[in-house]
Length: 406
Image (cartoon, rainbow, N blue to C red):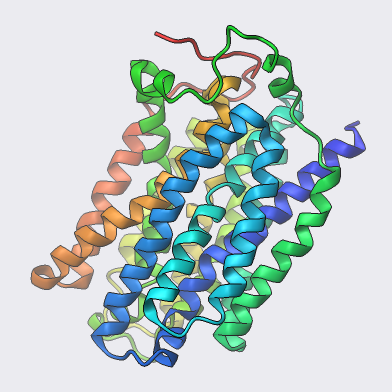
């Protein structure tokens, strides 16, 4: 039987990730409507949308490193308080922008805040729960979290874009009060007085070849999910026009179905991992399924918008390996680097959208939208599968270890 405070902390972490995903996805949903209100139209909607997405992702890259180091030096709870306060305030401010540059500034600062949420939550839950229940706890966090994207699609589609941003900010501020009663990690507390253990030291991460290899592999494993979210879902209207999809293909509709699938996928991948007692096997199966679904979506010439949406949902089920991916990342590194890595890796994955959108923008002029995305998809999924087989199985691993300096 788990301690009530531990159970409460799992719930708080899950709700925090719900708000995090909501605030992250709501931009993709309201991109067109909000930019039209600022006076943009035509190609400017796509170009400015890419710029704003990149600003948000740049903030997340910086925030991932900052919050991760803070979590290893000052504790996991320090991230949970600071990150949610920052992105909640910024999302409320985002509702009142009247220029593109104000919009970009809000997305950048909100990105810094959003960067800390999931890494801190997964690290804390992984360290608080016994190893036989660790996967179930992180599955609860990730499953409830991705429901935030589903909610963002609903609210962004049925309410004004300003209301959507304010809703996200207010949810975050309400959740902030709940975190006062959350429990700190015992693993972290056990090493705080050991002067021989260096915490949150990037030199260990980048100068230790084995650490760096694991870090890169964990990052590449997560890239396919954000490729689908950042490019396929965000630019669904552009894909629909090139494929001559019958009916209007809306980003909100694609995200609604995709995130509905993600909820199912995160739940099932976590449970299947517990049943198979393996992280790697489940990762490989789900990544392959997501790749097939992605290619099918990009070859729906003259299909109906509803067909695209349904396939988005099916692909979302297989792309729902986020819980297992984050759990694997947390289990792969020692306590003195666990928050740094578990916080920075998902944000490198998300921030990878900057590189992917840049490549996409350079390719689509000559190859078109669909062929460009197919080339990028093949590369991203191949690297992810290679990385799965390059990391050790982490299921049931004892987390009471630290990373040593070279």
